[in-house]
Image (cartoon, rainbow, N blue to C red; front, top):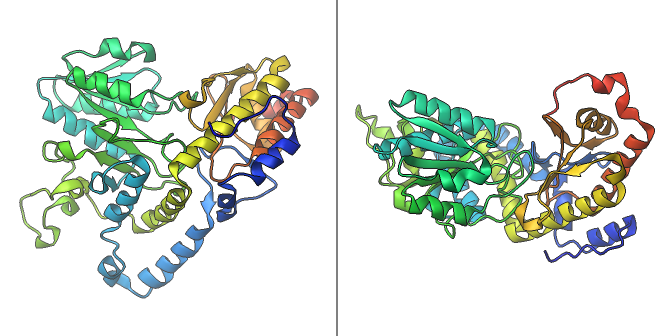
Length: 417
């Protein structure tokens, strides 16, 4: 971690860190209300300013004036490949290994199904009990559809021991959505390969926040959403990664016309396109992909390494302040203490976590809550400032001192994303 947090911390220090921040310029590239402290980029990223103009141009000119001609003139048809190639740079993958398409759930379905079909003598999808529910639900659904296939869930610490000759694919989330704990991608991928299994990584909570090296870790398959740290907007398209080595072996189970080798020949029988384009199915969501592209360009301009360094520094600062200022109220840091073992979030356990988070939101400190007792705070490195961390802890102290979270309106459970 290149930013060293000293022993003595005050707001002046945080202002100095912001003044020297090599990513300080990036915050001005987002639409942000400075009266808020936004620490929920791990649920929905902020709006890049460039997105507003890009979408307006697309709607008014490319769609409004170009009409159907824009599928070719404005390269709408190639947008999943073009933007996929940009996402690939963030993931240290090949340009023809990443495609922007569908949702994370649909992409999980495609890849898990393809892996099981390609490994007919292996019947198990292996995952951890702590995985994100969607990943587990999709795995359960696929194994129910395919005869004699099974889903195996084990505790996180038992994953290595659970690898055997029955496992066809290991499906894991790189950064735990509850605690921010980071799996050792390289070690688990290598272990799965030694057991003869494929590996699928969900990068939804890591891409745009911490460095990722898919090719360096020899990853087989990956998926990720575009609306968290990538800032692509609510419901932004997902992306999938299929390593070059597997592209001829695995086959897209949702055989749509745009994955055909020559879609505009309108042939009766399906022939898959070469390369990553075979994983396309239906028409791309052009407006949503355009929004995502603006955000990915911004992430590339910032650089994954710098973003990762800042995320480690922000989370370290927060943990140090929690230890110094919140210990007397029985907050427990649920995230790893090792900066390289956590993503760009810190989760605090507290018996009154839900009303505390609601009280903070009313003060303009936007975090979120996860059952049973986790207060989650996401530190998106492109727009979170060091003074935001200091001020957020100030607000937590004030909430605990005045006991506001004990009021009835905070105790009633409502939806917090």
